[in-house]
Length: 108
Image (tube, rainbow, N blue to C red; front, side, top):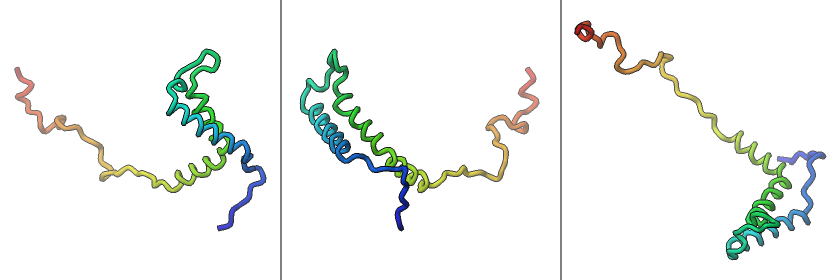
């Protein structure tokens, strides 16, 4: 199947992509191996955010077109769930039938 080219969609800069992947890898290693990298500093704040979450968010923004296309294919392929209907009858509550009550229950 030939691929449609969209002139408005450009591929991400490979240098930025590589730098973000390296930052993410080094940040994950630092958080996993260094206890000091799991803390917080006065100037930077929470260090795992800057080491792991910030490059991960930047990669998601950098590759948003690919992520949106992949998500669309997942949504299209997912089967639609339909409610199973009975014979289109009204649901009835148990214990509230008129034939179950006897007139002797009300006399006291």
